[in-house]
Length: 407
Ligand SMILES: *[C@@H]1O[C@H](CO)[C@@H](O)[C@H](O)[C@H]1NC(C)=O
Ligand SMILES: *[C@@H]1O[C@H](CO)[C@@H](O)[C@H](O)[C@H]1NC(C)=O
Ligand SMILES: *[C@@H]1O[C@H](CO)[C@@H](O)[C@H](O)[C@H]1NC(C)=O
Ligand SMILES: *[C@@H]1O[C@H](CO)[C@@H](O)[C@H](O)[C@H]1NC(C)=O
Ligand SMILES: *[C@@H]1O[C@H](CO)[C@@H](O)[C@H](O)[C@H]1NC(C)=O
Image (cartoon, rainbow, N blue to C red; front, side):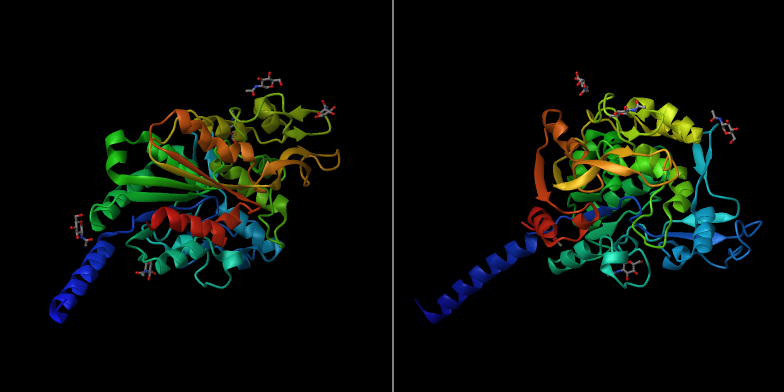
């Protein structure tokens, strides 16, 4: 073979490889966060200081309200935070609003920043990193922030019944992301509550729209049938794993969130014979929510449950390709046992079952029920011993996500 033709032959091979490589477009990804998984900003112009004279009454600008570590370092600061961050439920209109003089906005729609990091200083991945680990890896695989990987944050305190504005924004974001990426179908990647938010959205969309715009739905640690943890939030509050937070102080925020009611264990996943709460004077099952909310002196909670209990239905599949990722093998509350002294204001002792420490296995595997209900494939990937939030951080999970996205 002559040198010249040999070289042109090599060049041809290289151009074929290079050309193929160039066409191997990464599918664009939109990240939808879970409960607590995005920054929320507030601006205050309140009629009074609120619970303490030290609480700020007026701010000039929007500031990061969630997460602001300083907000929960002392009991008084926590009270100020709670007063501003809780929602006010109107039991006639069945909608929530912000406290008097508090304005709220969710920054960074379309971008990844506010779902990667919960504070504007990127100190600790463990404490304030959310999608950061996944996105940093995606960038190594060739993704570009705000173009091929984007974020769709929302006010995670609300449930889908109050999110119509978000859903029209999300729809536009998906279409725009498809267009700016050479008409490539979009992958929706959700964590925890974010997956139910996506499922509700997909359930409302026409099939032709989904066939055109959605490549697949990748679900991390989705509580398809709810979580017993939210029962505890309602009864006694949860300290959100922050050492300086007293669960009981956080309870009024947690109770005020329709998303907490939305995530209560579903009667499609828990049997009415199973005890969720063992209290001194009676036991409560999924069939006893009315009595439960009456007994904890929070009757609006039952109305919020009624508003949200049928928003998603385990027999209504998304009708797009699904990759269902979750972990099991960790003790996860099944029944909360309260002594006379603990009920309902102190923390109960759990009786556990299998799960990811936050969500029971039976709820995580709810995606499998769609196998016979939709044409599109459902791929299952189970991990062992990875906690609910660590599904966003562990290398084995991130490697698996890579195998879905990078062909
Ligand atoms: C609705 O809220 C009002 C004011 O908080 C309260 O007095 C009333 O009992 C509530 N109604 C129901 C049905 O919970
Ligand atoms: C993405 O958008 C955010 C928010 O607007 C911005 O801070 C960040 O620099 C952008 N990143 C890139 C790579 O453009
Ligand atoms: C867009 O897609 C077309 C058809 O598949 C392809 O020929 C073209 O190279 C792509 N452009 C980019 C920028 O990827
Ligand atoms: C609930 O438990 C009862 C008694 O164990 C059983 O007969 C029934 O099938 C269960 N129902 C569901 C929905 O699993
Ligand atoms: C609650 O259920 C437990 C077992 O699940 C049982 O031992 C207890 O007697 C029940 N308590 C009441 C008040 O019914």
